[in-house]
Image (tube, rainbow, N blue to C red; front, side, top):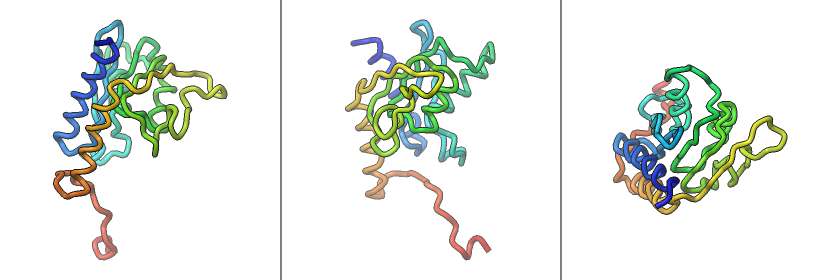
Amino acid sequence: MSTDEQFMKEAIAEAAKAAAIDEVPIGAVAVAQQQIVARAHNLRESTGDPLGHAELMLLRKLTKRGSRNWRLTEITVYVTCEPCLMCAGALLQARVPRLVYGCKDPKAGACGSLYDVTNDPRLNHRIAVTAGVLTDKCGDLLSVFFQQLRTGRGGVRHRARPSREQKA
């Protein structure tokens, strides 16, 4: 098993934690010098925060530890699903040099699928991206979650928009 696969398994464990609390099962870990230095998973539903993506939660943890340095030039981020535009932008802003992800996100992926901001020559930083590490396992987590959501067997508590009567 490769080092990337070992760390992706840890990200998958974080995704399982998200699923256990009815969050979209996406997990992330940050690695420096072959050691995990931070872990996170989606918390958007739990917190009611649209910024509660696993990658952003991970970046917050990293910048709050020790040096409080926003430049994360020694970090490799492992995430189970291709980051969206918001998360890929945050990784760029944090100067993360390397990203490893599991499954592609053809509807929102910003690291090669829908967009490729991590490799845009117009930006002042680029991220080396390794895609497809344990892609089947990562994709299965999401497939099962959304299948259960569609069939009503999932416990996801997505907040419905209030009706006009509720707003008044």
